[in-house]
Length: 447
Ligand SMILES: Nc1ncnc2c1ncn2[C@@H]1O[C@H](COP(=O)(O)OP(=O)(O)OP(=O)(O)O)[C@@H](O)[C@H]1O
Image (cartoon, rainbow, N blue to C red):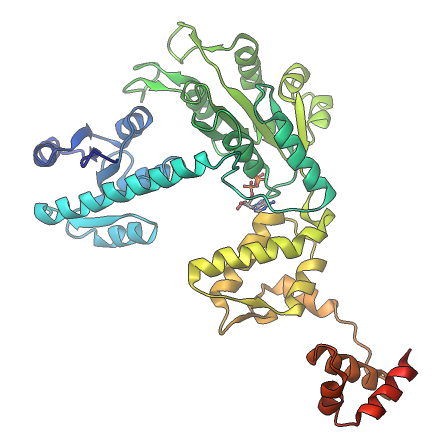
């Protein structure tokens, strides 16, 4: 945004007059204005133009403003959204704010105020863009920090380094929440392609027809609802990386289409038979056992070989428990910073973390820590802040003997006193309430 005070604004409203008036006012202010009469058209414009801020009506006949915002949260999380809402639907606007909307105005808005808010939104977008650009420039930087020191993780880091700049396809296998997407991102942002797009598509999140139009795009009129042309994700990923998450969910007909794209490096938009050259690096991920799917006839073997040129296996968290303390420290710092809390973790909590089997892996660990950080009072995270199944783990992990011998108690007291006094024996003796000589005597008995 530097050197350019104004930005690109997209206005979405089903009332042509409202659209016209606001567009005129903002153009006067020097903004480049794009208009859309519904969410579908807005989505299309967002795919084509580098929009700085969206101003949208809340109530619209097909999809509403809230649905547009959800779409944006997924695809364009850095673009601020300002809502215009009719008097009487303030509730939904407030809901939008809690979901991250930038601001809302009741119609008709106070244009002076709207201009002020818009300027702030555009400025914020500019800042985010600069930060993103800086991050990408960190030499060899992966932008995201992948925490891990176990041999399996070190092996993954080495593989990332070795293959990041190549065009070969990478298949990342591992349970849900193990960090597959993080690895895909660091393969991209650490590579020579880091200034090109990284386009992620979750193959499990959408019905088949939608994935197809998402991946390949379509021409205007290709099917009912295709009001305008839309470019697909393969085209969007030009010279960059496309990440197909949960590739195992792709149905057989789409597998065939994908195979053809990989072989021929060209695509056809739906409703057109013009071939378009595409060039991208493909990373895919799966939490399924693909060879078993092949044996069951649910996955094409030839496609598997194309996807699996380089394979990265990410182990579940329970198989690399040594990484748990590192991850916990990192996550507590991260969420703590967000909440403005500097927190320590009780030993019991760490013990529970170490013995739990983490079916949701690091994502689950992150959620548990986020919750604990929010709940934590004072400066500690205690077992009280853990969800029930983890609390049980903390209890199960403490098979303390009921009675200890006096000698054991004495030895423990001596060790604690020495620790407290950093090994200074006079001070330790003082803490224990005995003479230095008595301490020496007991120490010699202990050995
Ligand atoms: N090694 C790691 N270090 C730090 N954070 C991690 C690590 N691995 C995963 N995470 C965090 O855990 C969460 C889940 O990771 P990610 O989305 O990459 O997992 P995934 O394997 O792609 O999950 P799914 O299969 O469900 O899509 C993210 O918030 C990510 O930042």
